[in-house]
Image (cartoon, rainbow, N blue to C red):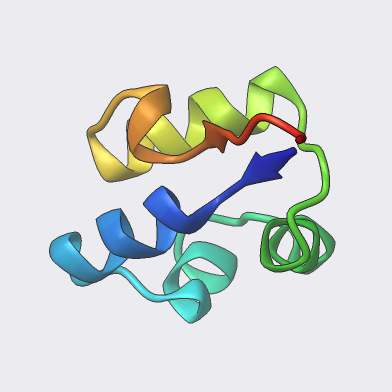
Length: 67
């Protein structure tokens, strides 16, 4: 299972809101919705988020093993 909990923590630490991602950095609102619902995103989007937040992929997404 994919979880974006690290993303929300990273955003909080960097003081970047979802509003800023949409309006300042042109991230599609549908992408934000996918993130909020732990749905998949493209590698391009992951790269963009890493650049915006100046972080690594592990600071955005984590993989949780299904039991």
